[in-house]
Image 1 (cartoon, rainbow, N blue to C red):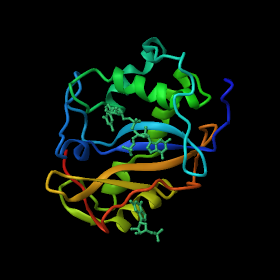
Image 2: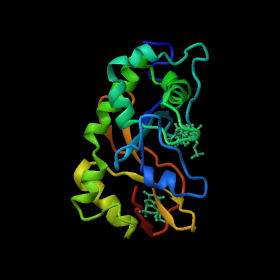
Image 3: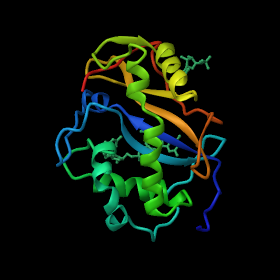
Image 4: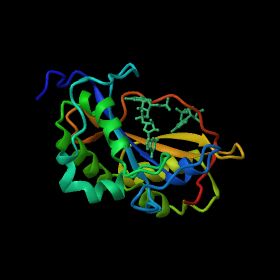
Length: 206
Ligand code: 5GP
Ligand code: 5GP
Ligand code: 5GP
């Protein structure tokens, strides 16, 4: 247990819809392993304070060490794919998440990535949405119906972050859930992030 242990209030567990990362004015690049599945991918597990602020880069001496995730590399590629350009194997994204957020988590690198992967099994967003008839087909859905479908299935209220497609339409970009500060269970969020969606948002294909 590091010196930073428990010095934050909770985590945001953040997943991204790849279709919405890719259809903006900036577009995206597929990782070297190829086009990711048409599923939500992990963005990160972020320590946060109840006042909305957050610690970052807590240990400048702790660098990402690929050998710590050798056992879960296949899962990392499939469940935590990078879509940033230029195309790469994901190490840069994972290193960034470890150094900025993971070093504040009080978890070691192996536990940080393993725990985050395991959370994705508990929060199967695509299943929550499709079972409610909300599909990534370019249609528009009410923000309320999206939140309700996820809350019904996962058991906890999500926060929905939107971005804009290349025509300026508001669309489902990232979904946040909250996790207790020992990363052992989902909790209701003590505070939600900021940011506006339309009341009707697009769910683009990928
Ligand atoms: P943006 O400003 O694009 O929303 O976020 C940029 C980066 O800031 C995110 O990738 C994430 O690393 C960090 N970030 C943004 N909002 C939050 C937040 O509410 N909590 C934490 N812990 N990090 C955040
Ligand atoms: P944050 O600081 O918001 O946690 O992480 C965002 C950083 O990770 C940015 O530097 C971004 O370029 C990089 N990054 C690499 N791959 C991805 C990806 O697939 N999605 C997002 N949102 N950021 C990525
Ligand atoms: P309420 O808290 O009354 O549901 O919503 C207050 C305001 O926050 C409304 O404008 C609503 O559209 C917005 N809002 C509620 N939930 C979310 C969410 O998950 N994401 C975003 N971006 N806005 C939300």
